[in-house]
Amino acid sequence: MTDNHHSAYYTSREAALKLNVSLRTVQLWVDRGILEAWKTEGGHRRISVDSVDRMLRVVPQSDMKLSGQVSSEDRLKLMVVDDDGVLLKLYKKNIGAWNLPIDVFTCSNGWDALLLLGRELPDLLVVDLMMPGMDGFMMLRALSSTSLIEGMEIVVVTGLDNYEIAARGGLPDSVSVFSKPIPFTTLKGIAERILKKHAAFRQAG
Image 1 (cartoon, rainbow, N blue to C red):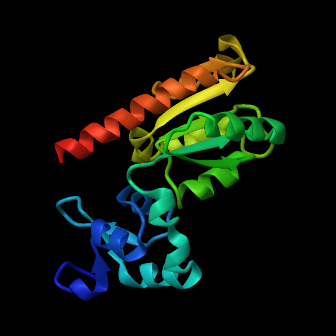
Image 2 (cartoon, rainbow, N blue to C red):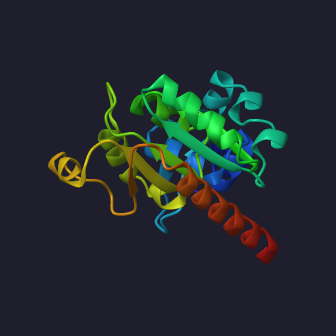
C-alpha cells in the first residue's frame, strides 16, 4: 500500500477521528501492534483502514471513549494502579472530595493498566510498584518504550526506599516518587497544576 491509494489507509489524525479517541491513543495502539501501520519516507504514520474497521467491529464506537460530559477536554483523567483494593477506595474517596473536574480510573495490576491506557490515556498516572503479575517497574518500563510517557505526568507512591528502587533497576527519570502513606495534598496540587496548564492551552488556542 502506498500514499497513492488513499482509500487503503488513514493518517493518525483521521484514524483518531474515525475511532473517536485521542491522537495519543492511536499512537499507543500503533506502538502495541493493535492497529496495523507503516511509515512513509517522510516518517508519517499510515494506518490500515482494515485494522481500524476491525477495531470498530470489536469495540463499538460508543464504547471507545466515555461520553463528552464525563470525559471532555475540560476534565483531567487520573489513573491509579495499585493492587490494594482498600487503597483504591481511599484514592477515590479523597480525590472525589477535591471538588475538581477529574475522572478517576483504577487498575489492580500493570497488565490491566496497560490495556486501559489504550482506551483512556491519563493526564496523571499514579502507580504502586509492588504488585502481582506485572508490577509497577515492568509497567513503567513498557510505557517508557513509547513516546506516550512524555504526554502524561507519572507519580509513584511506594513503600520502597530509594535503595530498594535502585536495586530493582530504577525508574524513568521523568517519574516523581513519593513514600507511603499516600500524599493526597501533594497529588491535589499536581492535579490543580495540570488543570491550570490545560486551561492556559485552551485560552492560547
